[in-house]
Image (cartoon, rainbow, N blue to C red):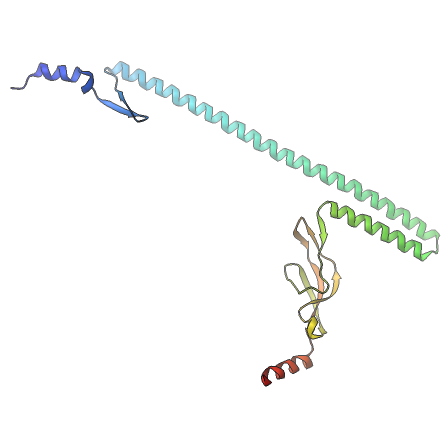
Length: 201
C-alpha cells in the first residue's frame, strides 16, 4: 500500500531534491519561493554587472579607435606639412633661378641650375615613396602605361614602349599616374612577310 508520509520524506531527502547543472556540477534548486526569488535577484544583479562591464569595454574600445584615427590623421597632416615646406624650398630655388636667368646669357649655367632643382625635387618625392615608372623599351603594360599612339617599328620593338610622352609614377607601389607612351607596331610589309613565312613553314 502507498505510504504518503514516506513519499513526502523521500522528497525532503537531499538526494531526491530537484537539481540543475551549472558548470558541469549539480546545483540544488531552492526549497521555497522566497529562496528562488532571492536566487533570481542575485542572478539578475550579476547579469547587470556583466552588462555594465561590457558597456565599459565598448566605450574603451570606441575611445581607442577614435584615438588611433586621430593619431593617424595627425601623422598624415605632419607628413603633408613637412612635404609642403620642402616643396616651398624648391620653389624658392626656382624663383632665384628665374631671377638669375633674366640677368645672364649663360645658357649652360641656366641648364645646370634647372638640372639641380630637378634632382632635388626627384629626391624629395622619392623620400615620400614616389617612384617613376620605367617605361622606355619595356613591354606595354596597361596597368602601368597609357598608349596614346602606335608607331611603326621593327619586329624586336613590337608591343614595346618606343617613346615616353609623359612619365608615370607610383606612390608606395600604387600607380598614381600611368605613363603616356607610344607603342611599337609592325609595318604592314613586316606583317605580310611574317604571315608568308608562317605559311611556308
